[in-house]
Length: 157
Image (cartoon, rainbow, N blue to C red; front, side, top):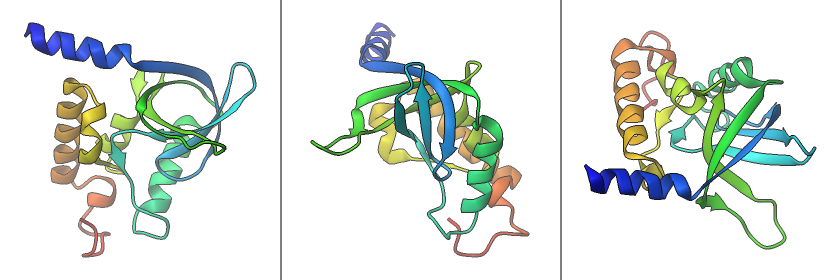
């Protein structure tokens, strides 16, 4: 138990936080945020996968995210190690988006508009890994969002 607590604290210690207003939704997992100083940031929601452009459910995932957070003040907790930055290029930070303390990444999985991205588990806390996996299983079993069998084409995983 002590080892798990130490691991969780070390992960939390490497996270940074950014607050501001969501100005646009790029797709179901990438947003633009204007911070309190007026700077724009492209942000990727860590730990989730949404359908790619043109894929079944992509528009619904994007619209759901837009209804939840567009023009709202949020907090974004990001991991340096999970972010993709190159010299001279814009940095896309990857992390967890919070609206009034609620985990929006998890919310998208709960309603069936995102899957848990297992490849990002190294950057998630143990509780988040477990919760995101369980949420995907529950959404799939309940037929929520793009897991709805009556609307879903056979190609959706």
